Length: 248
Image 1 (cartoon, rainbow, N blue to C red):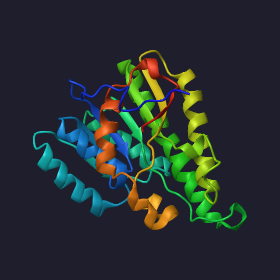
Image 2: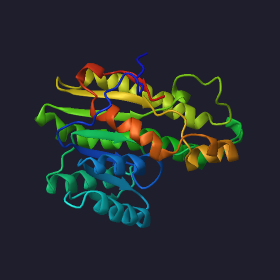
Image 3: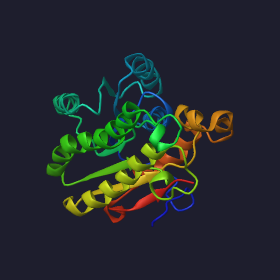
């Protein structure tokens, strides 16, 4: 298993401006990553289901990079038709991404698997796995003609080692699925493209707080994480294809 840390990754941002698509962009690490990238002149193409938070993010982006036209849209990634419309709009705006960060994800309410509500279980699978698949289904064909493109599927240690993660079986199952999906697609992509599964580490987000309670606040903030993650993501190459990476 390959591991990327801030010690092994380049500390500099990519010199050429990139178009980066981020799902789940309205909060947490998605929002922090978008703002970090925009600060260095990269174009953000983002989606989320929360229009209010998208509007506030749009204002922030316009302040940190006023000369770049970012595109933020309300999209339900678990709905194939919604993602199809999203892809069509991206093409119309001539913003086919150089990099995709499949970040949208949810976690179930903690509990034994057999006690978890069926809708809760379904929602985790629908967003974490099917949502990622919907994005890939519609955007990989757009990237192939350009003979380049990097895809980052946000995974978790939960998808590699479950020893420390009881009470979130649906979430663990979804992240094991992301790991397998990424490795399979890595064999299918044409030359010039790459896909990786990225464990972001432990970060203070709403999701972590729902599992850890007050202990979550002791972890790194999304903003601090983004300063490490952005250069790593921007400097991924085809040599990384199929890798399972971690940000420490």
